[in-house]
Length: 429
Image (cartoon, rainbow, N blue to C red):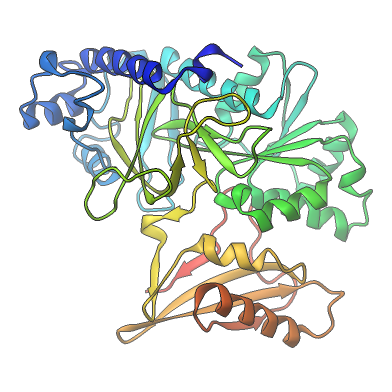
């Protein structure tokens, strides 16, 4: 563990203030997007006392960045260096609208890799581990940084793109992988295929850990429990965004929370209505400033992630704040059903507790001014009374959400399977 991971909160704030001052000096006058935003506020940067005056800086939204790229295609103006300095391209997964295109210089890309090394440290992954990445490397950030950071700390990283799930399972066995990096959904999908094909149980294999990201499932107790039982391995959750970078990670010693990498990020948790900082233990929106991605930074970026922060030291020895329960939901995913606020995470936390359900999909429909929610489920073949399973699911949803949900059983294999980020929450217009 690095010394910076164990600084007391006052020293940590001082370090963040120095890093932020350096970032602002680097971007002002060179980064057109942030130069304009900072000038419009009328802030005199040299007079700022940081980190005390941090909240005088304007916030940034994804809508702003999208509008900037639309007006200045294809890259927008949130770039600090000349265009010829940029060597890497990524884009968001477009789960909440038009994808953002994000580019990095070699220096900013290396910063991303350093952030991922903190994920590996927290997971106790190091030299001697063979890490398998069972997905096709697309233009979204995904596990790109994890794959490239691994060899720098002595990991043997094995790509698994361009092959079927069956071949990936064989490869995991043949190479003796000890760590798998994927989405929670795909971890469950591989376990499902292994069982369907009567392969040797994954729990008898060499994998000791799965580092999962891309969805909140890694911090949902029912989902992680199902993965850990299927694989006989520990689940470590991780969270990040393409436009922000690798933000948080679960440590080995304290499952169920995500450490914010506060050496590289300033994290705020703000009330959704007032925009004011909430106290520890209260729910709010995560707002992030990355301190080292100078070539394409985000300053006070509204992520839309709903979290609860805890700032007391962790038993692992880190003093970095933690997100209790991981990412609890997204502000733009919340749907009001007959007066009840419903998040996809809330549904998954119920359904994954029931071993009878193999796969599911939530569908929100509108009838006039009212919305309704129904659930489609696939039932495991060993459970013959599928109607009883549907009734049980409906009962648990009513108990957890205070909402009656129509639960329909569909044929096995009907619902879509996902390799990367899953979309099980469909809102019909």
